[in-house]
Image 1 (cartoon, rainbow, N blue to C red):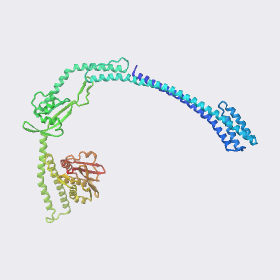
Image 2 (image 1 turned 180 degrees about the vertical axis):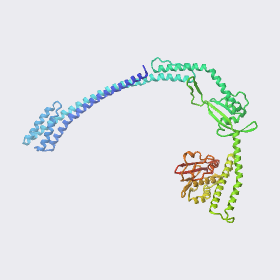
Image 3 (image 1 turned 90 degrees about the horizontal axis):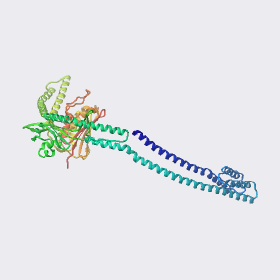
Image 4 (image 1 turned 30 degrees about the horizontal axis):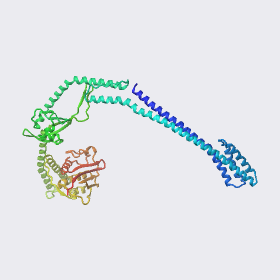
Length: 583
C-alpha cells in the first residue's frame, strides 16, 4: 500500500472515531435537554397558576369582588388546560366546585367553607406537581448518571484508540525515514557499502532502491577515479610550487597542508618536508610565521627583509571548503564548515615604491609651488595698491579673481603637503589638554568674515563644565574650520549654521549642521576618500577633494572618529569625536 493511502486510511479512521463520539454526545445532551424542558414547561406553570389563585384569596376579603373573581377564574381556566399529572384533574374539579360556591354563595359561613375547600384543592394541585417535579428530577439525575457513565466509557475507549494510533502510526513513517537518515550519514562518511532494505511495497521501498543504486555508483566511482584524483593532486601541487607569490595552507587539524618554495624563502624555513607538520611546533621558533597565522598582519601591508632587501607584502586569507565531485552533476559542496585556510603573501614592493615616489613628488611639487604662489600674491598686492596706480573696474574684478584663485591654489598646496605627511607617516601631533570651547571660538573667528559676507549666522551651543580634550589644538581647529567652510559654501544666503558640542560617554562630539541641499546617499560613503568630489550644479565651487580626507586622518590619528548625517533637501551634519583627558 502506498504511503499516501496509509495516511488517508489513518486520518479517515481518526475522523470516524471523533465523529461517532460527537454524535453520541449530542444524543445524550438532547435527551437531558428534553427532560429539563418538560419539567419547566408543565409543572412550573401549574405551580405558578396555584400561586396566583392563592394570592387572590389572600389579598381580598369575602365575598370576593368581581375583579378578584375574574382573576381567579382566569388562572383556574389556565390550570384546567394544563392537566399533566395523575390526580391533578380531580383536584382541579374540586377547585372548580369551590370557585362556583365562592361566586354564588352569599352567607359568610358558606363563603368561608368554600374558601377553605378552594385552599385545600390548591394545596392538592401543588402536592401533585411537586411530587411530579421530584420524580422527574430523580429520573433526570438517573439519565445524567447514565449519560455520564456511557460517555466516560466511550471517551475512555476513544482515548485508548487515539493514543494507540498516535503511538503506532507515526512509526510507519518515522521508521523508514530513520533508516534512510542512518544510511545518508554513512554515505557522508564515505561508507559506500551501506545498503537499505524495506519489506513493504511503498514509496519508501522505491527510495531505498534508489539509495542502494546511488551507493553502488559512488563505490564504483570512488574506485575508478582514485588514480585521476592522485594525478590532479600532483598537478595542483606543481601549480602551487611554481607560483611567484608565497602561498601555504593549514588544514582543520592545524597542520601544514602545503607550502611552496617562495613561502619557505620569505618565512626563512629551510626544512625540505613541511607537509603534515604541526603549526604549534613551527610558531615556537618562527615569530613571523606566528604573526601571519594569528592574523596580526591581515589587512595592512607589512615589511619583510628578504635577501638583505626590504620587501613589502600584503596578506590574503581564504577558507578551504571540501568539495564532492559527482560523475554527472558536477561539483557539489558537502561541507558547511571550514576545512582549513590558505595564506597568500602578495609581493607589493613595486607598488609601494611607486606610491612613495608619488608621495615624494607631491611633497616636492607642493613645496616648490609655494614660492611662485607667494610671489603672485605679493605682486597682486602691489598691483592693487593705489600708490602704484589706479585700476579701472574691470581690472579690479580681474585682480579679485586672481586673488581668489591664488588663495585656492595656496589652500590646495597646503592640503597636498598635509596629505603627503599623512601618507609617509610623518604627521606630527602636539597633544595638549585643551578646553573644547576655545577650539570652537578659534574656528568661528576664522570664518566669521566669510559668514558675514554671505549673511549666514553661526549659532553655537557649548554646555557648561565640559571636560578638556587631549588633542592637537591646531589640527583639530583646522578640521572644524574645514567643516564650517564647507557648510558656508553650500548654505543659502541669510540662513544659519549650527555648531554644537556635547559629551558622549568618554568623548566630546563636535558637530556642524547646515541647512543646504544635503548630500545624496550615493556619495556619502565616499565623501572622506582622497580626491573625491561631489558633483556640483555649477552654483558652488568644488574643492580639491582632500579637505575631508585630511580631516579624517587628523581625527583618527588623535584616537577619535568622524562621520556625517545627511538627507537631500534637509541639509547635512558633519561631526567628529575626541577622547576627554583622563583624570
